[in-house]
Length: 353
Image 1 (cartoon, one colour):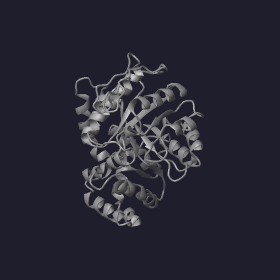
Image 2 (cartoon, rainbow, N blue to C red):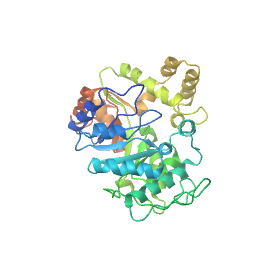
Image 3 (tube, rainbow, N blue to C red):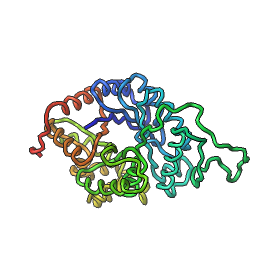
Image 4 (cartoon, rainbow, N blue to C red):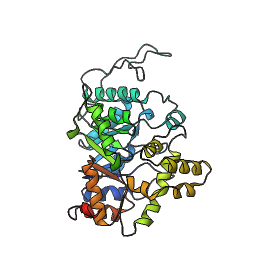
């Protein structure tokens, strides 16, 4: 199992210890470091800044939002960071949700799958540099000839030669059609939340994408990276309580009440009543109650909390369920090294679960 350090996106202020965490992750043998964006900090700049002190970990976005920039601009970011890192960049993309797309970026959210397919196609054209980039649209027509056009636009190739035409592109996805699309056109799937209990269903969704004509990869060379908070502790109850506010935030506030992909996933897991209580409490401003409404079992669906033996066993379960990388948040350098040491500490004791 590979480990990726998930830096996420910033809160009100930049994190103070991110540079130390990134260095510790590389020293501890982590495979990658990822950053994200929402409607504050961007996903690319932190990788360039903190990643400049690294030499071996991969640097990825998890995720960069499609509506934040045109596909050609996104490809420019990707080819630039790939050169600066010596071929270590991973471009993780996601559509976000209608609240952000229409409320922050001022773009239409409709037809997210079609937009993703067209976006990725243009990015790959830029990276291949085989011909001037063209797109018939309808979402990202190149050259643009619509209302307000001067008619002077011309197809262009990037001035800078990309380091890798096959730079990996991973898609953040939660629903069946999005996951299938990732299997069809991408090199990996970024699972915002992953549950071993739904692994069979996830594999069906992936298989649908791999079976499509022209699918880019097969299951055996496709990466599945799942966000999974891991805490090695002898007091799991206390640690679960610390994780609940974040889960409640995603379930209740990272999406519109009418369309929240995170809440939909937990409803698929059978937590519909809990989701309704969490959403209702948050809507009334009772955020502490929303966190308290998160069941312990829901925490254990998406996080690993326990002693070293349990952590190793749960990691093994996820690997057997098709996950190739776990993306983890770490509070400090000590947690980075503790996690690496735990996973290197011996064979998983699955029989103890």
